[in-house]
Image 1 (cartoon, rainbow, N blue to C red):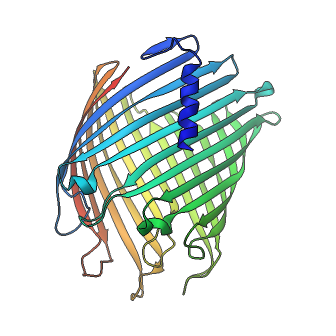
Image 2: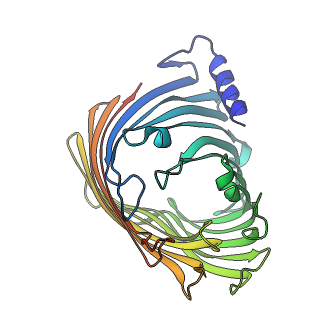
Length: 392
């Protein structure tokens, strides 16, 4: 799939041989970028005891492409290479990531649109101890969507998406899985910039090498508002329920599980050059921890930002409660975690094409569970970052 996406991107660029480097030529636009970030991480393995710190360099470079075919078709693509370099145990922690994306959107007669987007990643998950390597994996996400008005203020959309996870180490092969989502949205235009919506998705989750434990089908039903929610307040508010049915039972756990969920992404521009952003979500997340098949995450994140000339200051924090569905082996209760974060970020626009920032991030996890040696699964972690990004 990666070769297909990258080949298509190269063909898109080659459609105009004169377009090279930082250039707009006709309807083709090429936007190269390069960024470097230097981090100090006080606890790279996220452990409660035996903490190891490291300086980390994260460098990324790539290009995004946009091309118009007439007035009705937009094509897009891009590729980025990300390089991670650690001072501590570089053989275990160093990594390179390859990210590619390709998309197309067509505007049809009578206000209809159809779009398709594919995202490919060769990436790694963070190592959890000095004795384990980063978990290399491949992920591919593809989604297609058709939108059309019905009559009056009503509209509808059809959507299908497929996600594939492939872990390259046999140690993590139990996490290999694919997920199919398909369904529809019905919308109603309440006001010129506000829509009410109801959506339905059918999901099919299939674990490739661990059939029976996590295989499931589910039905998601949501309702909400999108657009201008109130004066100076924009975003999306949604709430609904997931009805999940597993292929096999886990001991002491129902085969059919219903979970209430919600999501909120709200931006409040209280006064000029000042923003308050709220993000909240409650949803199920897949896991391979013990006998658990999933956990329920309830997350709330609040950020306040203020622009002063060329500098944007952001202060934020979050709280996440994680509740596992099944009891921990040998215990009469499930695992529960509390994740707390705090952050401060200063962004400086040196030029339109050059940005710099300085950040501080604190993370902590409190857990009622521990490993085989009795060490709590919690941790404390501080990360200080300085970065520079050039956009050509």
